[in-house]
Amino acid sequence: MDIERVSNDLEKIISEESVILVNEPMSKHTSFKIGGNADIFIKAKTEEDIKQILRYSNENNIPLTIVGNGSDLLVKDGGIRGIVIKVDIDIFKIEKINEEDYIVTVGAGVKNGYVAQKLLIDEIEGFEFASGIPGSIGGALRMNAGAHGSEMKDIVLETMCMDKQGNICVLSNEEQEFEYRNSIFKLNKYIILSTKLKFKKGIYKEIKEKMDEYANWRKEHQPIEYPSAGSTFKRGTDFITAKLIDECGLKGYSIGDAEVSTKHAGFVINKGNAKAKEVIDLIEYIKEKVADKFGKEIELEVQIIGEDAKK
Image (tube, rainbow, N blue to C red):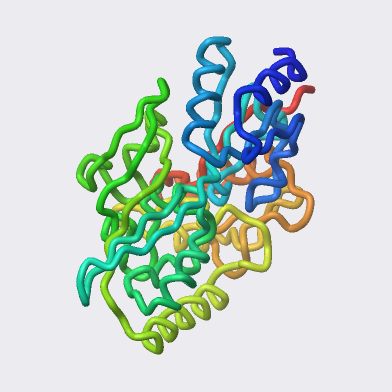
């Protein structure tokens, strides 16, 4: 692929709102702060821009990767070929239905923390569980993010998406096929544009207390002082994955700058300059040790994309 030519072509067909970056380090766009370069990285601000990029990539047979805020993403050291779209649609609208009920429309690129703060100001409850979840609404939907006994599926009414041919569709809650850390969006058939969430009227003091409680819990129990992609592994059907990793004596075990957190064994962290290969090697080591000791197969919650570095 001629990166310069493709970049010039794309600049002609998308709006000035969106930003095109060439040979962009993905370490700048993931919470792990790890990853090689994307050939072309586009912060897409509008539905029309995404549609035009899709059309161009389809017509020219250029690989296309969709990302959100990169909070559950590990990009390999060789980076990503073709075009990477970061969906950065940032609409936010509160609609009061009656004295108790609200519908809030949120763009896929809006950060979860921003949503939580805006709802707090308007005394709208129901999003407190997600106030400390890193990343954007699009990513939270894709993985049906959850905490403290609640999940995204509990508050979603419908979601506006685009298929890979550029057609707009609206999916109901049921059609999004939410499961534990899973949804229809993980099949990569749809690009999330925006979603409608349902909430109730609350009381500022009570909402704030919950948010503070959850923030303190996270600070106490999770290694938020280090770059990571959140919880590395999914919870097992009949076991707590972090507990098994801990019982294997793996807290603090490291390969290069990739380390099993001493605070929470379910987190692999970047102690400074970890390479994706070090993280992946550590993940495989953890899986092997847990399988040997307990006969359990543990699954990744983190998504790994991109190419290995060339030798």
